[in-house]
Image 1 (tube, rainbow, N blue to C red):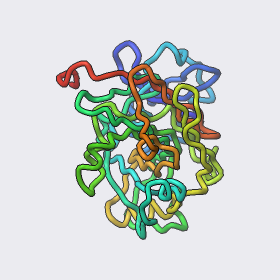
Image 2: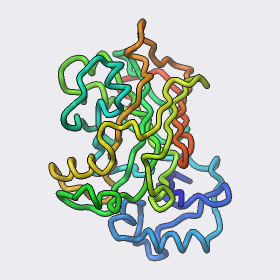
Image 3: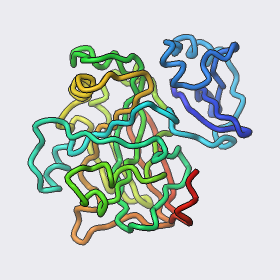
Length: 288
């Protein structure tokens, strides 16, 4: 099942993709105002039955797609987590997963514009596989970690390399307003029982810049969930982005960065394509 969050007629809704359209979901009694609420209430099975019986109300091109979980409690990202990417950075392979956070306002949905900020031109692409937690927990054993995953999606983890280099901490370069994207939808975990078999590809203006099997992860998904949940309780709707493969622009000689007019595509086999144009920030006061 492919689940989307979207805005239609000024309202934020969610639903299932079916026959090229969207079947709105949420429960007739309003129990599930959001996909995150449905996950928290264990409503995916019932929502799936409603999707099978329902009729699409909107075409995909009639709505504004949002990140599958527009307002997660946590967005936790992992750095240096593909062996080939570690090699291209010249760094040593980490002993533990390097973690940093993004804020929800740093992500847009499929088709929305990525914003290159006024104060930097070192705007880099990072295509990633992200997962969404469906069942929360603390100190989750790796052996049953995948049972806590609701599904998987694509993430463009846009990075401002100059700000990233300001300190040993990654966050400053990783969470600029509307610098990343997530979507186009969440594919439920029952359709992707082994995420390590997926292939990730990032394209800029149609040119392949990154291409890697997810099996190249240094720390696989069960290990990440076990490690992160030992630090903080995971709750339904939390997003974990698993890292980027080699082929980013910032470690080329000379570096290559995104500019207005570019289009970035992140594709994961079994999930789909997340596509976003790049624009320049028009005003530092444009954010809400």
